[in-house]
Length: 72
Image (cartoon, rainbow, N blue to C red):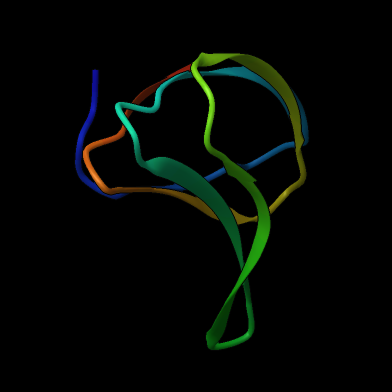
């Protein structure tokens, strides 16, 4: 499981599964828009979440001890 920010440029729209182990923290999903990062979702509970990722640069930001994994 990953405990640091992961940034990835997706070259096509796709569906991924985000696995979250919250450990009392959260994982934010952010999309880059110009020079800014916009938070699209924040997950505070353990689970596996289906995400529709657009053609964009996306990052996953864990906080407060959370860990995650992205499955494509």
